[in-house]
Image (tube, rainbow, N blue to C red; front, side, top):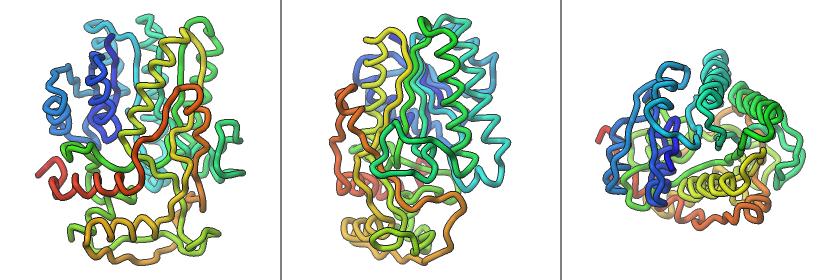
Length: 339
């Protein structure tokens, strides 16, 4: 069975590609390398000992998508391709809507033309906006506090409408991620953002190596135990395993529309992360309190019960593993894939 992995050279895409290949699937990867590196694909091949096609193209390139479906017997798509920085989305919202929304619409049109009905979509906990309750179940009201979250919510609604339009054809699962961190236990693949990291863990790791001077902690006056934002951090390997479980579930159901949270169900504050990283790495991690960022919420963590019961998915890694694997990746690759 051949799976198209869009954005497959990215952080979550590479880890999922490894698990797909190790589970016996064939894959085709498409990526424009806007925020990823071809070396990551080479390392996926080395980890798994398997070859697979890589197409360098943008998700909005309809001709490239058509060629992939004509040349390969694609049976399902795992769709990661998109822009994903909350802060950046406030600055360039049109780019986020073009890539995340229009790109997904175009992908679904090509899938439909080629009779490919199975899609696992990379959504986000940002669709819950400022959550009404924590832990957050899938039934919670959705909203968005920034263009990134709004683009994900728009796509969710588009995919729901698409599945309702042909309920006996479309087979779609939305996976609402919380905060992926960590790296492959080998240290060969991990999170390697271009320029200054947008996410907390790669930023902390680069401060620990001395590449960056200090961590900016955005707000210490939230209604949380230590005043800093609380998030649900999930190991990228657990997150990737959730995609395989979702794919297996879709294969067993035939058609339908499903939504699952992928998180640990435990909230951890920014200062807790910094302290745990300092403890594990043995390195000083200076930080500075900065103003809150627009669109950030105080507390956000998952109720993962539905994924546990329906998919049979459970997390295998704790916070210490997440930070150890991040530090292992950073030490081995101080300049990321450019090392």
